[in-house]
Amino acid sequence: MKLLLNIKKILGSKEHIKITYNQFVKDIKALGTALINLGLSKKRIAIIAPNRYEWCVSYLAITTSDMVVVPLDKSLPNNEIEDLIIRSKAEAVIFDEHYNEVFQKIADKKNSDISFYICMDNSDKFITYSSLLEKGNLLLSQGYNNYDNVEINNKEMSIMLFTSGTTSISKAVALSQSNICEDIYSLAQMTDIRKEDTFLSFLPLHHTFESTCTFLYGTFSGITVAFCDGIKYVQKNLAEFKVTGFVCVPLMLEIMYKKIMKGIEEKGKTKLVKNMSKICNGLLHVGIDIRRKVFKEILDNLGGKLRILIAGGAAMGKEAIQGFLDLGINLLQGYGLTETSPVVAGENDKFKRCGSVGFPLPGITVKIDNPNEEGIGEIAVKAPTVMIGYVENENATKEVLKDNWFYTGDLGYFDKDGFLFVTGRKKDVIVLKNGKNIFPEELEILINKLAYVSESMVFGRPCEDGDYKISAKIVYNKDMLDETHPNISNEDLLNLVWNDIKENVNHKMPAYKYIREIILTDKPLIKTTTQKVKRHEELKLILKNS
Image (cartoon, rainbow, N blue to C red):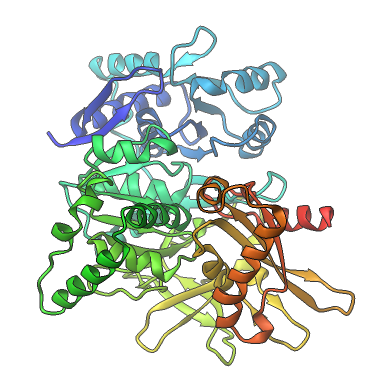
C-alpha cells in the first residue's frame, strides 16, 4: 500500500514511522466515530500542534464528521491562544502536549465553551487522542455506524481560519468543503505532482497554503508526505526522506539560493556554472535536458531527488527563480489568500514567466479593478473557491465581497500574454505628493539580492511637508559579513551598504524611487508564522525609535 506519511514522532523518539493510506483512513474513521459519540456533531473543534500525523487525522476526522475544524497558529503566545479559543466558540480542542499548561489554565478559568480537552500525547489530566482511537475502534466493532451515515452540506462552513494579525484585528474566515475541493481540483489540472513524489511539510499546517497544497492536495494525488524535524533540519530531511518537492515561501528559497551560490563561489566554480547553465539552456531549446546530470553535485547537496518547488506568499527575485530552473529544479510560483482556499493563480510546467504568478487556475476568474495608466489595479477574484465570508463580521465581509467578486487588497496587472503579476498590497503602496506610486516589494527584491542581506523592508518615512522619504530597514547576515569583511566597523558597514544600494538599486530606478535612508540591523524583521513581514508593526517600531 502506498505510504501516506513518513514522520518523526514529536515524543522524543528518533524512530521514523511509516503509515499507509489504509491505516490513515482507519484512524480518521475511528477518531470521527469517537468525536460523534461525545456529542460533538455540528460543533466547532480547534486543533493546535506542530506538523504531525495526529494533526492530519484530527483535521479530516472533524471535517468528515460534519463538524467545523478551527486550526490555530502553533506559534501564538498563550494569551492569544486563549483569546482565539474564546472567539472561536469551539467546544473541544485537540492539542500537542506542549500546550498542556495553557489549556489547563483555560480549563481552570472556565471562561470558554470548551467541554473536551484532548491531548495528542500521554496525559493524566486530559482525554488522550489514543484513548479516543481505541474507543472509536471499539464502537465500530460493535456496529456503531453513525460516522458512515453522516450527511454533509458541502456549502456550509467546515473550516474556520483566523487570518494573521493580533487577535483583536484578525478575522475568522469561513470556508466550505466545496471551496477547498474546488481548489484541489483546479490545482490538479495545473501541477504535475506524481504518486512517486515525497513532499516535505514544514510550513505550519494551520495555514491554508500548506494544508491545501501539501496535505490535502498531496493526499488527493497519492504522494508521500514527510514531516520536517524542524527548520534547521531541512537539508538533512531532504536527503533522508528522498524528498522530491515542497511548498514554501520565497524568503526561504532566496536564502537557500544564496547558500548554493556561496558554496559554488567558495569552490571557485561560479564562472563554470554560469557557462554550463548557458549551454544547458541552449540545449533545452532543442529538447535536450542535461541539467540534472551537469549539476548533479549541487543537487546531491539538496538530497539528490529534489525536482519541484512551489512558492507563494510574497514576491521573489528573478535571479533566484532562474537559478533554480538552471539547476533542473522546477520552480512554480503561485498566488492566493486564505479567503480563496487559497490558490488563485499559478505557473505550470509549460507556461512560466519569471516574476509572474502564472495564470488563474481553471474555474477561477480574475480581473484588475480600476487600473492606472500602467495597467496596475486591485486584483479581484470570482470563483467557487471564494470564502463564505468572515464569521460574525458582516461589515468586513461586505467590504471585500461585492457582486460575487472578492476584492483581495492586492495590486497587480496582466501582461500582454495573460500572465498575472502581483505588485504588492494596496495598503502598503507609498503615494508621493507628486502622485507617483512606489511599490516596496519592487525595491526589496533588488536589496535582497545583495549577498549579505537576509531580508529588508522598504517604507515611506513621513516628512514635515506631507511627502515621504523612501527608506529601507535592512537585515544583514552577521556571519556572512564576518567572513567577507571581518571586524568591519559600523561606519564602514554603513558605507559598504550605501555604495551597494546606490549601485544595485538606485541606479536601476527613476529618481523618485531612490532610497534616501537606510537602517541597518542583524535582528530579523517581525513576521507572521508564514514568514510575511508585519509591516505595520515594524513601521511603528521604527518611528518609535526615531
